[in-house]
Image (cartoon, rainbow, N blue to C red; front, top):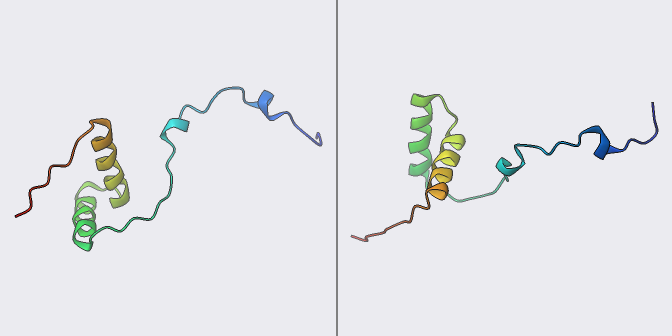
Length: 71
């Protein structure tokens, strides 16, 4: 076994998933909102954090804008 390896020559291909990498964050979300996604999670079988990520990704990809109307 060699003492050192040239990593660039071992795997010259770029990672095809590098654009879809996730970054852990901390965010404050209302309890009711979390419960909503947890209920969806039970029905769909998809973890609730994944559902939240899918929803936010859809919003970003479709450039949805929030329209608020205070009552």
